[in-house]
Length: 433
Image (cartoon, rainbow, N blue to C red; front, side, top):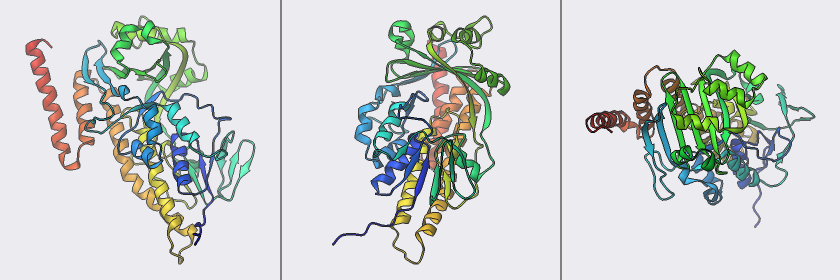
């Protein structure tokens, strides 16, 4: 006997980034119809945000639920887990080797993948036509109409904003906008680093370098799947100064002078690290780092919700942003699927869906707070403290290890990290390490 397919609500997802496409993929696997609206004109999957690592209980859990774990494995770079944290003079403070596919750390496996490849993998997992390209959203009206640059759409039972920090869907739910963190950066790249900057290439070891200075400065070098080194020069700056930089982007030569000149932001850095900046070519993108306040909430509104950066954009200093967003997609899809499959005929589908979304929002808040608090703590440790990197790294690693430990063990885990560094420094003084 043929089974009757449950009625499906009309769902719109705004944004075809990893978070929006993940939600669409999970709903598609459950035979629930949805439409993804994306402002970009075509699926060029342009590179955005360099490389990122997916975490076991969040990003990787979502990939498994989406049935894309094998495809992900083919693209993932486990050698990208290699990491060095150092001071501005090149002294290595923390060094982690790549774990490999069959090994795990305290925080679980964290394979790297280029953001563009992740977006492509998720986008191409959807049936043709599910993503409607060239739909740049201008606003969401009170009656739920989606006003695009060239058209309008209406009649949706649920609109999910997954379109990033400056979400138009969030404007329907709250007046809160992201605030400037006090940090700006230049995003640059080193093509063919193996020949251009061989010492830096060897130092990166196909992973990442994080080089910190006392006064809120950091150079980040990350190996991409393409082979190039992605570079972030991060520093404290007035918002108005970087506003002007973004309105009138300087030439790369001028940026190098700002960073490496006589009084340049990174002029006191190790020669190998400065050589990396000197050999940057091609793109140079000035950026400001914004964040939503820790603990941000919005009043539930029937027919609309937000996930990912639209709900909790944070700075990148704990590496959790996209992972938290993918977990949002996993949890929201489960709530939607359960509401649709619920056979309680005394409650309408619309009411079941609304209650499910509201519960999801309530449960998402405390979960996200842990990640945004960690991220904010890491930002303050690294960029808004005058302590030397040798002291900052102890506090930062204590935070990370504690956060990834079982709750009852967190105080002991943090203390253990501090004891480790104290012994390491003491032995280093004796033996000249």
